[in-house]
Length: 241
Image 1 (cartoon, one colour):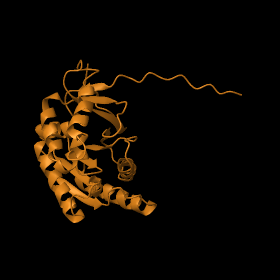
Image 2 (tube, helix red, strand yellow):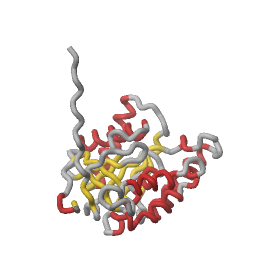
Image 3 (cartoon, one colour):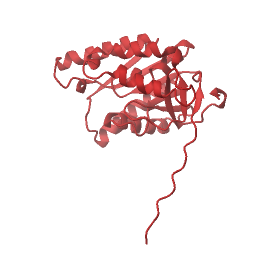
Image 4 (spheres, rainbow, N blue to C red):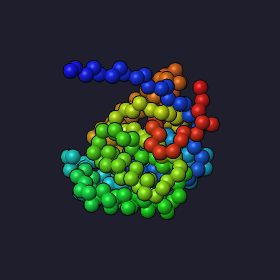
């Protein structure tokens, strides 16, 4: 018997947000730079509307120096300094570094340690909105963090809104946030990561992704950042035509 593949389903048009949800914001980033390379414009919008924002950077970022231009211990401190500088560009000054090894293959015990830390971070901060890498972002550390944070959200009985952001793989989004007004701040935040820009032009590549996200609702003029709903319900009041 031949099983015919099912017909593809047209995905829904993503909602457009001109604003971001109000409340306490907790963002989990796999590496120092993902916090601005992915949702940097969204962070700037939260900061501008007075939301309390905390960023958790989970790995030390030492794989970001393939040519070994820096002493490894010095690189950890450099990447933390770049992270702080980049976050200042988008108006955020609360950042926590866990310091897990970058690119480490996680054993079940490592995953459980991460879940415990993430659960404690959620319980301590009481966020209304949590941001994390989306489920198919194409990097092992990003995928691992998605698993860790979603397990922690469930363990903490999180009742708010959790949203996945993109860096390495473009998603089919539930929401596109209009970040046109804050894009320049995001660009400066990415450029603060000079140790990484020396290897990859993230400002160019992810600026292009941001410009592409303006295609559906903004007639290709401006910038946007895409999100997928991971937990909770998207607030209908934010949706715009």
